[in-house]
Image: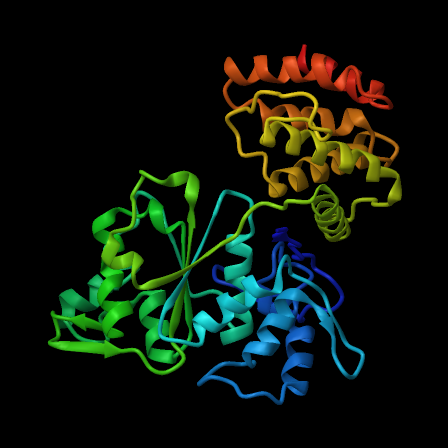
Length: 388
């Protein structure tokens, strides 16, 4: 099975004319470094909405079929091309979308770089037209981030009241019938995680200070993401896990699919960053993907040589980052053509996370695999130079 991401976040010609900058007010789409999905792909969402004649759940902007089409891509009857945001089996996306159409929350689980955050953002954008109702999970995330907080000036002046209450993104989603997002759920302390149990089971959020509650209106649901490498950090309680339908997003299985994903994403990023892109760098993209996959899998592509795996994840997202940084080096300090020397340092930084153990693994891989591979001499020399 092949599942990965085609993370299309470029500031392209189809994006909306404005996004919202919370610090300085509205900013033009051309000025936004990373437009929200509902702005970057506003034209596609509008085209889908105009031609979508299928039943829509309460307060959904699109039908489940149209949401899946938005994620997976396709061509509409009027010829409008919907670009794929996610590359993988349709059934995985369909399960995620239909989960949101029920009263069960959705948990996207996978190793780093498997598109969990990307998929959650685009699902929220397609379902609710707003992907910004977000709680970012960290070790310091307080209960108020999920429930509500207080405007202390109002609280001291007038006592507890609805005017003094500051709703969380989850409370807003409940009140407005929208989709909330919780990123890195297992990074949140266990007692704070369990704040979600009543919200997801009873669809209500008590406000004991006021003797009131907020009841979720139809259309409300929640998407959470979790990194399965974080097991043991703050494991989900069985009670909370039962409130979620879990969809696992694995790394790409096919090398060709991963190369295609990286190439398309790098092209999109390169255009948004005004970097030169072209077919000349395709060989380097394939080399980066090959190195990452072999070290990740612990065996060379032909299955003949076993290699040791470093401590890092070496995900598709990291491959995209390495190639994009290489493009920037080629553009600003080279001739604009991506070459081995442009990606070598990025690969070293991605592979060698543990300076002692990972460096030994990398040197062994260079000498045993890269050095003997036909057509890789320039790549070998560039990697040796930065590794010295």
